[in-house]
Image: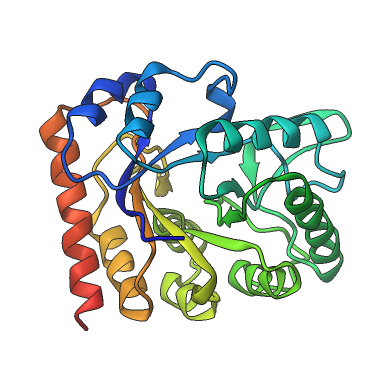
Length: 270
């Protein structure tokens, strides 16, 4: 896959903004928010310009105890085909179980037994998708009491077993460091970055002593410092800015992309 460059998450509220922006290398769209049989006109415009579009799933539940839904996989595959996507991404997260929806992307219990189940779920997803799959680390407010592995160790073993790609969200690493005391740099050292597909960057808000990964603010410098740390270890194929609500003026988004490029350059030059 060719280098993606610096990109931004496509949202309907940002469609004309993204069409106007210079220097955007790729976009990512939440797969559940589009109809693969009737793509938004803006995505068609961007695709006609040659911009890669990556469908990003948020509800597959690759970390569930149950097998992934064939209907959800079929829809994700249809999105990939409709967008001529280079890959598909999802979260390493628990979403539902016993007929109940969690309502949030919860961390997976990081046990050897859970690893076995998740690896099988990944293989099933890979068989159903027409393009490679990349999994994203999640932001968490808690850890399961019986965890045997760190998230980075869990992901590393999952990659070794399945060959799945990595979508590293440095904002989520920052969130887990603030909320759970988990070293973000140690996680970068443990992740198999040679399998890196691309990177997420986003801002959030501190409330009540906790960091909330809201995607509604500028990325704090600590997140950009983590991006630089990652780039000092490997040059990522792509880095994408997520902004999901309280959308700012165009110049703020352009400045965020410039900050991302600067952090990448600082890390790569080390």
